[in-house]
Image 1 (cartoon, one colour):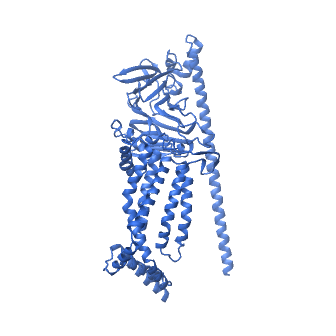
Image 2: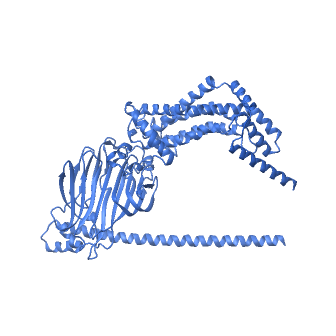
Image 3: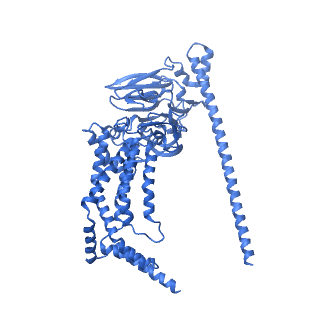
Length: 634
């Protein structure tokens, strides 16, 4: 009877699982159908928009030869009131150029957006090495406002002609562009370029358009960019290319780091299309109520996809007030340089959040320790490689007391190992009692088994902070040291004729040196760690694990660091060399095992008072032991 019941339950279970699987398959199929319908609808809408754009282009061509009544009719049929702007002499595919000592940009009459933007003083590090960094070129970026007219036309500013006027306000260059429905009715873009600044003032306002444009709903402003590759490694640059945004006044977040992504965010103060070491930012004094953000990775194969890294899109609403638009914004096109982004002229804008310096403690260490110290060192040391070496020495010196305490703790554990072995043997059948006696021994000898782990734990925030620092610190870009031509990217001593998965298509020497150094360091310390660590019942033999790690850790470092910045590999190479030296001195000239043994024995004779934590642990162990005895009696 029991077997039949069991079979029935099994059949019921299988039946429920089958029903659940069928339900999941049905749901997935339904979702796929909905997604397909949504995609089809989106494609149809895009076709309609493309058709209208072509019609508008045909109308603009007609405007080139005014006087023909048929063509004028075509123009008015396509654009309505905005046929006025298309019929002006400025309705040509020309640009207006602005420049200062830092940037050079060209703004198109058609669309009124920046068509070209070059950063002076910086060069690409690609096959186009020697050419200047151009953030905008060949229509890789656009700014567009879509609006609906009162006569039910859907128009886009990117397809319409603005009338440009250049003026001066002191040393500032001012470019005003007006998309006119008449002399008194227009949409205006205003760009202000100041001397010695990467940031532009940018404003959008309207005048008298309430009779021409439907003002019942906000207009959609679309900002898009395909980011050019400017660095040696397209894959690595793509990893640090993302959208960063500030919302709710002071909160920041990012999306699309190394992948495709999309999000909708409320109350946005700025949107940054951040490349690895350069960035393009749109800021607003009046936060956007909502921002629809999209990031699409364009690097599928580094050997083939060599021009762009990502495609970014942002859509934000521009709300009317009193029937008019009035938005004061800024545009920053320049390096992701911490000193520039935190300068007084950008105070309160939180632009430093664009740099991936790490969260919490890690970001704090970079902002208030590593960046200031490195900046101080580079102010009087011309070689950035030497700055990294000096920084490494300072870090290791600061952490040397912890290294010393760690080694002393290991030495104490090594002295106690015979006694721990006796306890293990004596209480081999009573794990709880064995643990209690081991803790008593540690307490009486003044030994903390966790002290040996302290340096490793303390190095984690330092490791992570520096892991974020070296790829983000702009001043390392294209700075050479020894055979490395760029400390912000990997060094190459030999270019492979093929690509090794995970490792890459080149051999970097600094990771090899760092791996060799960590191998010798682990070889030096693993023996002592294995001897000091008591074997716990039911746990793997740590001596065998450590022997494996001696070879596995350097191999992992060699593979992982081959595509990371040479500056980071240089740091870990020097750091491990210094640590080897410190450990050698401590082991052979400072720490005496006989003295350690005498100290441990002396500690045993001293009366010990348990701390609150130790007392609590002791009580818990005793309670567990009593519970275990009761269960055995039952």
